[in-house]
Amino acid sequence: MAKFYFKSSPKQEKQLTPKKETIDFLLHYSKALKVVEYQKITFESFLN
Amino acid sequence: MKNYTITDAVLVSNYINGDEAALSTLITRHKQRIYSFIYSKVYDQDVTEDIFQDTFIKVIKTLKKGKYNEEGKFLPWVIRISHNLVIDHFRKGNRMPKFEDNGEFSIFSVISDTDLNAEKRIIKDQVEEDLRGLIQELPEDQKEVLIMRIYKDMSFKEISDKTGVSINTALGRMRYALINLRKVIDKNNIVLTN
Image: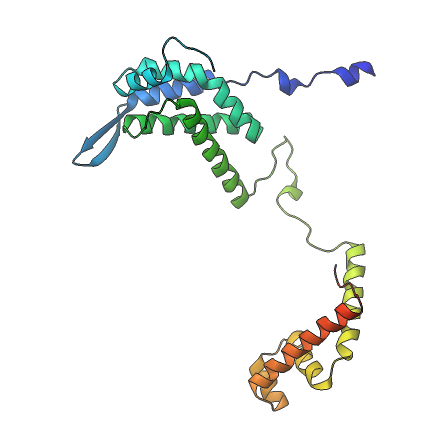
């Protein structure tokens, strides 16, 4: 019974950090995104 | 607040000037705070992951467009963006109700039984019965218009044709019928709720 009550919640053991894939995606996204301004118009382009 | 050797402001400035590694440092430095903040609002890791990603996509775009106003408040700014995206997420959820995916499909998560249960049906019958009794107490002209309008679903034009009074008179009788009903209900403390 004691075991039942004192069993810690598995949710709290989770590390609250984003996945490595998410971080990698953002870094690649940042490298690929180029913003060019021409005559007050902003252009976004991706280099893939 | 932690003391870092390179401040956020310097990293942001370096990133705007083309140093991609500065972004990596910024994300590594604040990822846990931002991720935990989002998770504390949505309690779902997949949704948190999506909102975290969308937050930094906005951050990247704003910085690259040179629209970021440096006031030494990088983290509060990012938190504010994520907060707005969390609100967007809940607004979207309200518009498009989803059914829970807990491994097994339940048809009752997408359809619901709108029929009244036995108890509510009895209450509804009683309320309608009481209301019919109250209507009988109304003056004859008002009762006639109310029954034609509510129970027979006739238009005021049809009521006027049938009773031989003008539309305005029929409207007036309907109005007084409702006023009188409310008066009787209030006076006798009658509860007409389902």
